[in-house]
Amino acid sequence: MAKRTLDAFFKPSTTPSKRPKAELTEPNTVSTPKTNNIPIEDTKSPSQHPSYPIPIAQLPSHIEAGLEHATPATTPRKLNNQPHLDLLHFQPYIPRPTANELFKFLRRELPFYRVQYTARRGDTETQITTPRWTTVFGIDETSAFIEQDENNLVLLDTKTKTPTPKTKYQCTPRPIPACLDLLRKQVEAANADADNKTPRYNFCLVNYYADGDDSIAFHSDDERFLGPEPNIASLSLGGERDFLMKHKPLDGGNVNRTGGCVPAAPVMSRPDGTGATRASSTVSGGTSSTDSPRSRVATVPQQIKMKLGSGDMVVMRGATQSNWLHSIPKRKGRAGEATRGRINITFRRAVVPGGTNNYYHYNVGSGGMYRWDDVAREMVLQNGKVERDTQ
DNA sequence: ACCATTAACAGTT
DNA sequence: AAACTGTTAATGG
Image (cartoon, rainbow, N blue to C red; front, side, top):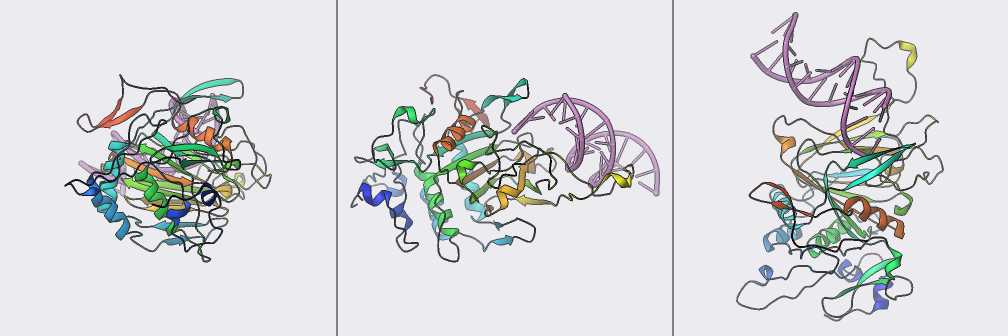
């Protein structure tokens, strides 16, 4: 393993393609194969790092094989037939059986959090418990985890190539573990454009929707810390859930913006300055009879509903985030579908430290860490050990 | 086809 | 943002 130089790392070719991305991407975690009598695939040591509350297992060889040989499982369907809409839907990206195995693996191996935070609404403060389980890994592009000695990742400032000062972040950034980093590389490759340019994600957000009560409200991932026209790949694993999209209101008025994977930090306006993103209404459809005809005009919100099944991947790009809202609504346990548990993994690229702070704040927070308990069949707070937690 | 019940949806807090 | 409330739509007996 010729180890690349720092310089090589920070100047990852501007040459698109060609060189396997593996060369360009952040090294991640240990990879010390033990050569015993056991198949090396099953002896790969877990990803470890001081920022992790627990070691994170590597993918079982059968899942890894499935990912490498059968991905993408289908050619994506393009959805760009509406204003500002530009997305790809792989149905699926990972073959269902493999996706289901991956779902169980990640649910069992990753640390999750039920983040609580306060939101200021005008003059009132409300306590909010995020209605889903979350976790996150990654670092914005102003820093990078570099393999210093063997199996030792240190955080360096991208420009100065010197150790990142503790004061740079209000959180403890964590490198993307090997099991997710493999996915990251493959998803990047699957997104090569006509010029063979691929996105370069540096963040991996994971959501676990345990049942139909877990959800995410309408929002856009359009914070400035993602740069303009962000490319965000969203992978679904496990139970099927509805994914809703609707165009942001067109009319003037309005203020708020929604942000990122949840509450955007401070309010900011869209890159184009119009700054409006709301989850409110608009409507009309005109089905109702009680509605007086005069009261509706314009703003016909086009709404899209799609089922996201295990292994499906949606990639939102271009003007999508600045013009569309999306959500995973609550669902009653009907055909048992919404009760099956679903994991969503999103890959994205943050360009400034504010993004890192925001993501760790809202996806890890400062509360306890939970892990899936296969016997109890639910997330269980990990007591005892722990934990110096972020920040 | 009708009614009763529940889920989805729009609007407010 | 997310919970809550009132209204409409879907469902199923």
